[in-house]
Image (tube, rainbow, N blue to C red; front, side):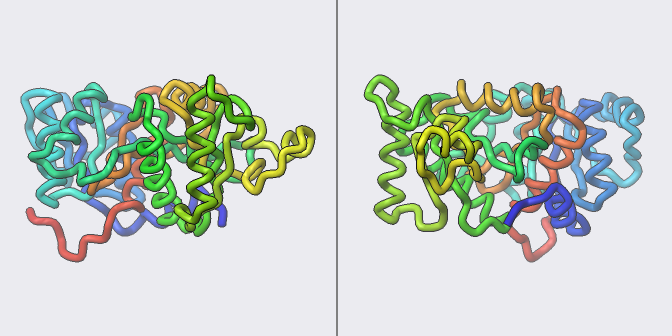
Length: 306
């Protein structure tokens, strides 16, 4: 099954989730909030300076008549307020506004909020590039710097869970490296070899894994044939697992800004999905990120407390 932009938007629509926006004093974020509200994807709680939010909301065309605003003295305090809201189940999703990413993530990791759970947080970027026949995920492009072998397996499981939620029953995973031949000089290629061995031993029964694979092999069946590489994944991946944040971030930005591919990006592995978009990303990508986070929400049977 291939995921479409329409499916994500449609699945998130008409079931509005409460989304806390930490440091909401940002016109682009407020424009994305307006679009998500119009499609009945969210009911926002805007956290920050009410006067600044009001000015920027007018600029973004967002009417605040029925929007809850929580006053906060600083961006850092806004993040803490938002994290407390999701911890207390008064919001289903949290989104980063005009605040440093490091501040946002540090708050997410605080034990007092319990948002992190017991797992490893990771960044999932679902791209819809026009040059490819289906969307694919790039991970981890924004959070884990140089993940260990064990951390890579957690990142992979986090990502597989996202695709299962979107209806991809057995996602194909390409373990990226410099080459299809493992080398002791390239530790990431050895990690890829070990993860593939885990897959062959039955430790990842809910996906198909191959690697190490260079990027050209991962995305092109023709290159695989030309180079004589037999791969169930080559030319048809659902997940590109990057060796580190350097390669992941470069690939992410190449797709987002050079290829202009639409992207839905969220942080997963916590008890709630967290939206963390770049200011340079398009309004549609921001909307997609909000929609994806809402689709990934665990169902909450009763209405959150007021």
